Length: 99
Length: 99
DNA sequence: TTATCATATGAGCATTTGTTCATATGTTTG
DNA sequence: CAAACATATGAACAAATGCTCATATGATAA
Image (tube, rainbow over the protein chains, first blue to last red):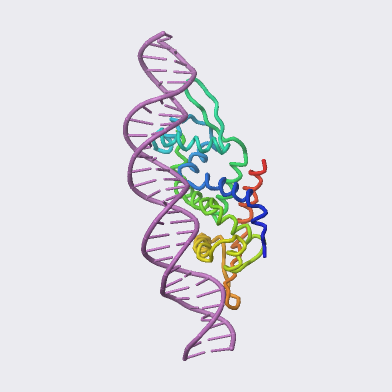
């Protein structure tokens, strides 16, 4: 009997946690927008037509997961995609959708 | 302002739904086991040390999402990965984990 | 045909999750 | 410095999710 999923228990748990982040409409839209250009919180909220608070809560999750990074610019905080893996994951997911 | 996430509303929704499936420990373990070999329900339950019922409920979700397929063999139903996209998605996710 | 075996399913429950509302925090700039 | 502005945060609530338990379904094989 295959017990590899016991062996890779931790990796698989982390993997599930990663996909969980992508598995929400709001967050995937946010990542999608961020894939095209860096934006501040207010602009993200406007782009998705959601409250600043809701967006901010989700950004916290994205940042904790190291999927996005930030920098300050004047009064705003600019969010951007942390690394190209994020783009790859969205890309390959899209390919599956358009089967 | 970027309104592409409005334009791709449906695709992004589907994409989130797809990742949602991968975003659960139990299901990702099941998919991982199935990536290595086809197995019947009882064996999957044994491999993950979970009840047959719990596994069966999740298999239903995986099947509805067309991530796995089935065939009968004697008294058992054998489950297997539906197509290579599933492997690709897990693969690329793993690469991100091991950054 | 009928008993048995493997799998599927429905209801119930506890947990997790995402949003809202109110408000706090902390820079900036006048 | 103080007012204004952009973002962050906490509590509360509703909705979604995953498991369990009991039982149904349906194919196999004796």
